[in-house]
Length: 79
Image 1 (cartoon, rainbow, N blue to C red):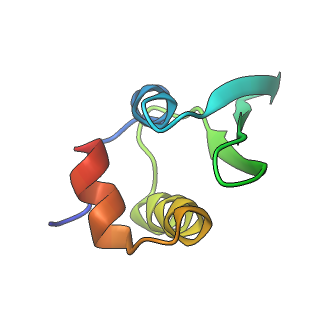
Image 2 (tube, one colour):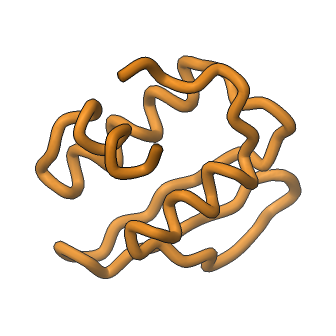
């Protein structure tokens, strides 16, 4: 599955909440999400209109590493 090219920060935040992440704080346009599933994990998402593909790829890779899955499996779970 290909990484979406037109995903906004707020859309990604909503998708990550389905995996158990919750908004814990916001500083400017950056939102910090935290999950306690499989241990505590924090991820920061820029709340921009469109996320750069490299930024989105890195966020998805960090989530995949935390859950012990591949980035492709996380993509299928989210989209």
